[in-house]
Image 1 (cartoon, rainbow, N blue to C red):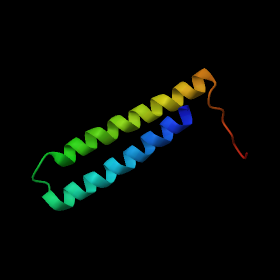
Image 2 (image 1 turned 180 degrees about the vertical axis):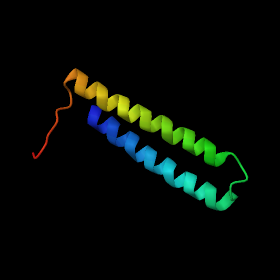
Image 3 (image 1 turned 135 degrees about the horizontal axis):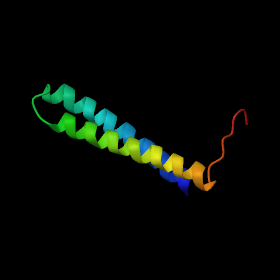
Length: 67
């Protein structure tokens, strides 16, 4: 369940990244939609990092180097 939430947040971050790019090209920087997309992207990334940290802390995620 935790891994699915992490993947979902990563996909949402990518969607926010491309929507910010779209707004930057379409609006040519004259509106605040680019800043809103940046805020959403930073928030989603912070939640992703927090979930990963929680997963390691709680033992639900294990490092799998070379597995």
